[in-house]
Length: 299
Image (cartoon, rainbow, N blue to C red; front, side, top):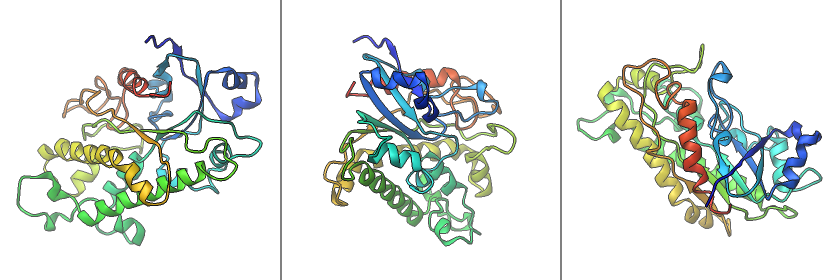
């Protein structure tokens, strides 16, 4: 099968211009929500790209993207904040029949939970804290000893709640896109390193691991474990959502682990497949686009 058609990425403002006709004339119409892996997460913005800009498909397709850097999954399902997403998704004069929803979510929620310190006073954030107090880390060799089991359970419970909210909105009465597939990707494993995305923007993982006094030789194995746990969570998510009252969740994970080469541990800037600590380089996003497009099974 030849992948000849670049995915046309539209912003909501494009729907009021001649460019909006791309959506109505395409074979497939997609709605996108997400974080920097679907938008732009680097300063200056022209230094990188994203997954969407690198997707080629077997038929013409267009997506309306509501993704923006730093957006958490919790923010995405805040319907008072995400008015356009709610409107496009659930029905009304601005809604379309979407053939699928593309979702890049959970990464910023994960990083926030990793960065939460033992002194956090907000009770909600404190319950989501993932890393264990250094003085409470047991002796051993498994990287799981650095994690708080209660925090990990609370984190995945919160993410499950976010999916329930999203799918409930998708399936509301009057929606033109009830039960359409939701493609959500795993993240590939970044190398924790002092490589920020710009002034005051990161690093994230290396800063947290330093704060928690985790030995540097455990940084990459610990990050890999967390990324693998995210993928494992997604693989069993439909059963959890059915149990929560979503008759046909139709969540389809897109597996990206192992697509990119890790940056060298001593690098502090762009290196190979990575532009900074957590954002891929243009070369990296090109690889991710190929991996992603091969798993869009509806197209």
